[in-house]
Amino acid sequence: MHELKNFNICNYLLKSNNFNLNEIVQKILELELPDNIFLKIGKIEQKKKSPNLSYIIDLEGDPYYMVGFLIGANLLQLYIKDIINRKILIIQTFEILKILRNAKMIPFCFSNFEQDQLNGCLNFLKFQSYNTDSYDFIKDFYIVNLQESSHESLIEGLFKIGIPNSDDILFRDHKLLYKLHRIGEYELILRHNQNCLQKEILLLIKRWIRKFKV
Image 1 (tube, rainbow, N blue to C red):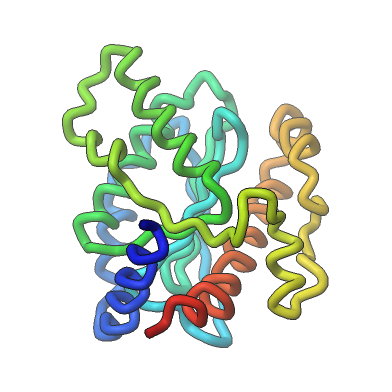
Image 2: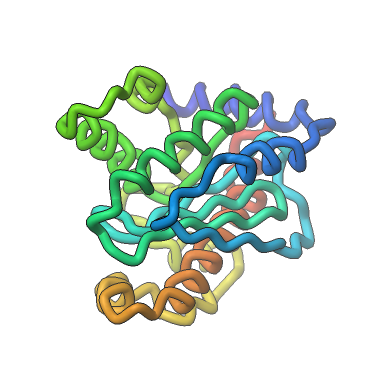
């Protein structure tokens, strides 16, 4: 079922080249940013451009305290310093996803972690008696998983496409991420998150599109 869906998505992406991503990014930046959410904006140099209507989402933490988006060459990273503020981060994430969904953009990630986290976050908001009517799309929100199998690590995936070193400053050590967040080393986590996004876009371009391109 997912194979056919991925073929259709790939065909859709490859036919959608004339699209202004700057307008979408600007809509996201115009969202009101709560005081307890921190935003880092950047540009990524891409040797080969990703399809215009695709983007990568990557979450850090369980429950997550940081979310990164790579939209074309635009890097947007939001994070909280105290997990007690997770509710406002979830709402901000959902607002961004709503903008991207309305623009008919297709999300990608590596593994089912992001999908599971977002579904759990929707349930969390409902448990908090928050009105989630405008976020119910999350229940059927399809994020394309770039993994070949549920056991494949990102390092394995990169090795298969000829990238032997992930260049991650934290060596993909997720236990270290929690420690760094506790002691306030946010810049290191941001660099790790950026590395993940950049490597996942390579898997999208060099493996996923080649597999599902008609």
